[in-house]
Image (cartoon, rainbow, N blue to C red):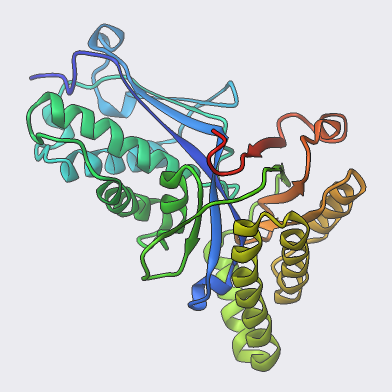
Length: 332
């Protein structure tokens, strides 16, 4: 019985944030999302000498979230094994994982799990990158995957983490390493932002299930069709306007779009009192815009700043705060 690899293999991926278009994207409108280059997840397949006493792949997983050891439960371990096996299969390694000797796999993440920052998409992307390296070593493939193949494979894997269905937005954003314009079923478009800005993301520590929040909006369409459809239409228009402001470098107008989007999301019923409180706090600290990002019901709040908001380190717990620079296109 062989090991998958005799060498240390590593892969990393960024987190993601939706700037605008939450919920309306489900109904065919545009969304804008971006990778968060300073908030990353790394997966390492450790070499055999680090796995000598291991008897099962169920023992393989080691997880560090922001430096804290997290012991994955049996259900999570089974899910990780299933997802990793899928990545291997997609890259031409047809044998079941049990055919190979188990090896330690270390997951190190700055991305909070289940908070709407694309942790499962980052895991799925890293699995594909690791599987690609193994397939190249074993001559199962003779060239690297294209970015389109990487996104396609990672989205198939990400479906395991979303009860069988993922929109593709998270994986596309994670893989982009930039800002993307996303419409379900349409080719991706990459946006070139003309002016630098900064994002701060605050973890509310609340968690709302994406499927539950989406179902809630669908129910509002049934009970209050005119008002709800109008909210979704406005969100779609705001996303279109935001594309123009990003490419023109008009951060002030972009901020106004984000603030108006939050009003619509609140009317859709996906905001919470805690989210609204954090929004007010961010604006009191100089945020040009603040809104929920993701499905809502908890998760994260996004603040847009013209300059690096170092003052936030005195206002929010360090485990809840993520700050990242969005450079003007072509400056890095």
